[in-house]
Length: 245
Ligand SMILES: *Cc1c(COP(=O)(O)O)cnc(C)c1O
Image (cartoon, rainbow, N blue to C red):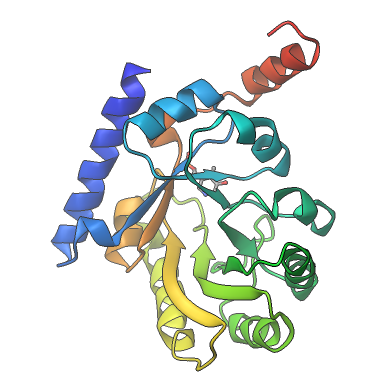
């Protein structure tokens, strides 16, 4: 637990360095602490240490932890199935992973039922990797315009992207640059439901490069919480279900 605070400080310092090295301010960069596989105690430790935003990539984990977590902003950053939107629509503050009209329509419908407007990011898959979700850079405008035309209860707050895994951190820069260029283009679309504020790029392995490329929201997990152990998390949940926790 001591480590979480120290790690967080180290990440915050790296964010500051990266921002200042390109003439920006650290305060312009939102840090989302990615808490997947982490238990409420660990997450609350991070919140006590200053974390204001947390990110989860599974609906089930959001539901498991929601009640036990101190007040914080929740970000859904993982692939979202349409049939699960209803479980998180009243819990999360922003959905980063919108990459189809089908998903946008479902979010819109559920948001309307809750009489709210949902903030979303459109997810871009800049290297067109089969293994990753997201629309192509070239396909982004069409999806953005279609959402604006059809979804009264969605506000598009920007773009999100996960870069390919590369050996050298610097090799992701061109992908981030490509997403940033598209962001700068789309932010000029004149529509009250489009209010670009976030370019969500950068994880533990590449956030300094992402910031250099113009990211203003980084999603950092293992650099704060340590390496993830999916199996241990699964066992912990099993034990809880069986009342042995
Ligand atoms: C897990 C995850 C992260 C954080 O990854 P780390 O390498 O642990 O920082 C960021 N974004 C998404 C979409 C993730 O699923």
